[in-house]
Image (cartoon, rainbow, N blue to C red; front, side, top):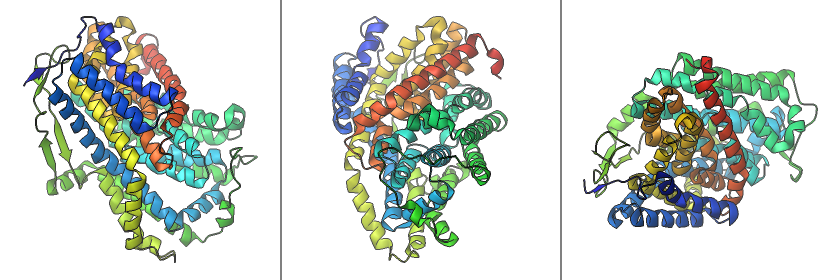
Length: 547
């Protein structure tokens, strides 16, 4: 170990935390105020982090640059790999003409934008989050909504809002499993605690999402659908978190919600169909008379995608693929070169930096294979779509995503620099000084971690142990605050620059990250406060809600 982290360079944790917030403040300012492009905001935020890490936290320049490169590599794989393949699959359905049939089939089911958002952004997005996570749901569902006629900002924004309810149990429960591992708490019990917080929050997400689209009065016109989506999703998520564990709450909740909405629409329709005021007249209804075979063929790429990402999420499948190929690379010059110290760890311990190259078991590979398997299906549409056109589409997608790739790499570089310099831990330690108010701030720590890293899993790995130790110190149930880290993190997902970049990439609005950030910011803060109040009440007033 060549360098030991320090967490309070000013010998005043409040002052140190304020300086540690500098890179995040730059990001907020550039995106929300200056309306800068994502890669420009990320570059300036990274520059601020480098200055603070080296000049204030005393991190050697070589280690600072190396930690940044390590983060950028993590952004390239597996995150970019998921985004690239997801957008490619969508682009193929557009080029082959199959997406027009998908639009027509949805118009036959419902041409109401509110109901389409419930089906695609909320329910189908939750299935993708539950099976794959890591950017897949927003990349797929935002592209689908835009193709249906949603404006790009609303397509991206609605999907970001919807993708809060499932995040803590995403990727077959990986965030909760990681939180259990780093905190030393029982995973089944922790799943039950998250199951007493997230489903309560998820109850309001369908209504919140539709109110964002059309206001409260017009949302009441589809109240039966909102109630069905809320009750089906939250009830199933609670039951599986309580009785089964963290792996299946999202997958089963999404399936039950889709079935519930389909059954509802057989017996009920809204009195009037709602579209956006500035929406151009759509010809989707004209394509609603395709045969059942044509509709099944058009939806086949997404059905194949659902099957692949489900199996790729299973531990047995992952283990088998990793036996074929898995490289766990100790990052040169960084692995073990930095030591964590108290109060983050009981005694000085080396900070690992391992880069996992799991090319076969990565979620992006599942999407790639689903896309390749879909090409012969799409070729039957009579448009002559073949592998040559699919490969051309892949390279065009790479060019389309060049700026989001840069943005995500810069953001992950910034996140890892803050982790390895100790700046992230400084922010976490500042929250631990809130004493009896800690339950209120515990979700904010999770929110901050997901904003930094774009991942609920990474946030739990970063702050899970600290949440557990601080809760014990202030006399609060540690299961409650560790669960709150995961639950609070779901609302940080929608404004994470990584998530914003994924949304703009999939809706062809690269350069408008600031507009989408402003769209989501207020909702993120309001939702976080709801969770803060819930956790505080559970700590001191309504403890009967907890296991």
